[in-house]
Length: 342
Image (cartoon, rainbow, N blue to C red; front, side, top):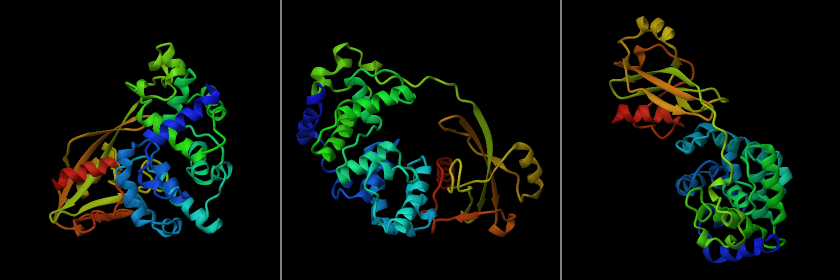
């Protein structure tokens, strides 16, 4: 199948591929880069409105480079994995300052920039600069692992090396930009995780997973590891006028640079209680899951008459109806605020 694989995929793409995605209007590096970063861990339909708003506000690499990180994070709120947004901002500034606003053209050079891994760099260089390199996002991993029966979890180095080698072996010498998009489309619309549409697949006649009726075995599953559970208290302060106190988190780490509520443990809350103008009231406990652990969040609400009635804290800000769109909020903070504002 090696010699005919790319031809079949391209022929399918010409008829059935996605040709009207907003970042396809201009196959230049900036919108392609933004879309590739947003599409990491996120579905196309979710990304489209975020992409459109982001490009409308930051239409060029220089516009993004000159922006405040707070505004970038605000437009990213709800997409999750916020390190992506911080790295976008860092990379925009590097390209603007050290590359005169022009993207590096090769996969190898693109990989040197923050937040751009091998697959994302390959997508940019192949789609925009026609470099003959492979990509291996989640959709493409699924297609390659099933078509060529490459078992094992793709997160393991040995499996990843096999997938990369196979992805490179079937690359076409022409139309590499279309082929790159075609492989992403094939995995996203036909060779999907559950109930793949094998009858519509252009390479089903030689798919080894289908031939042996073992589609569900590919790609291999991530080994299960039980996640520990941690607990935290978030102190939520709200004025009678409806202003809500926020605290900006440190630039690195979990929810880096986003606004949330001050966190403390029970002992710290007990020590702080005598200084508060009213007793804290428990709100509904939230559960938020990260890659490596679950976090149980116990929001404690303190209601005050005015901002002056509570001691100041570092990096504080006050959310109100007038500025509610100005802050990049972590997901739990969004949920708590929605509860408070009804």
